Image 1: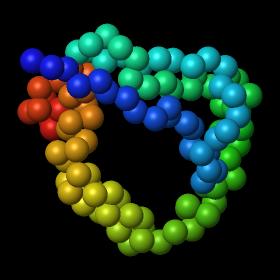
Image 2: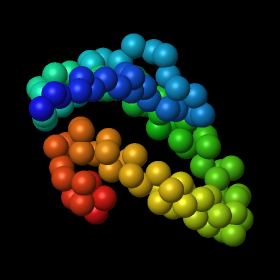
Image 3: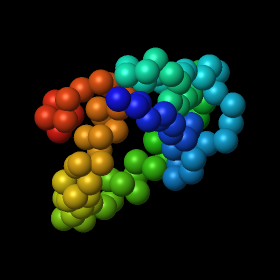
Image 4: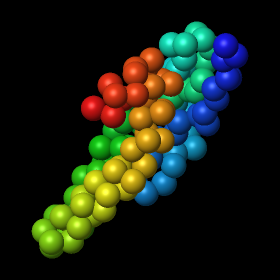
Length: 107
């Protein structure tokens, strides 16, 4: 059986509506449990980046708090719908990254 090489884009943090471009403190490699090869990387942010993220969240909170509950419910319902629609692809990612069976990945 031939094993397909897996490769995913490097993960970046999402802060204040933007993907960050600053250099993280450390880069963590993500390994495939199937092949042991590196399939992606994720940033381990330093204290300054974490503080900036917390400040951005605090600044955004008043606007989120002002959103009517009906609109918030719609946002979460839309997320649920998207997850359900893309369940097969998401389960495939979980299988590849964590070495789970398809049924475990869907759970």
